[in-house]
Length: 213
Image 1: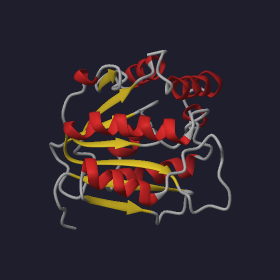
Image 2: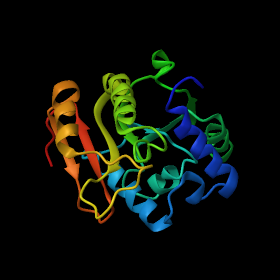
Image 3: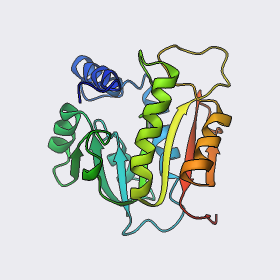
Image 4: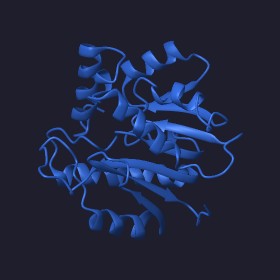
């Protein structure tokens, strides 16, 4: 795993955890209220009765999504967590031993990823650290190519917007035209781009089949 360029991102989040502990800062979200807003947006991927459906929290970190989920209308979802960081997986397992946690880097071990009805990737692709845009985009595409075949219904992820006054070099600002071209060619023609919740990012819902609101 250490040979992969994206290890720098994993190392960064583990450093945040070591410095700030189990908190929004420990997963590098500067504002707790904004973090909770993201949880709500991610879960709105699910448009039907959630009872009995499975949800994979990909890049679960400290599993802050889980208690939010339990107190939402999506509480019927069966929660699973996945993270490439052993430190975050251990933390999450200790907090919620009733949940199943998968500690893998899907680029290194794609065969270990099972199937789920829904997958959410909150913050997985918002920071690129010292990777170039091209390197981060390649990592994004590699992950998506592994994950989308394992998704039965839909997938959600967020990236930083290009519609900002200025861009940070360590963040992954994704042009929508570049993203749409990849989605249509390789993932699905059925997608929604959410840019309506007031943060300097956008969230994308990718569905395997057409959805009905």
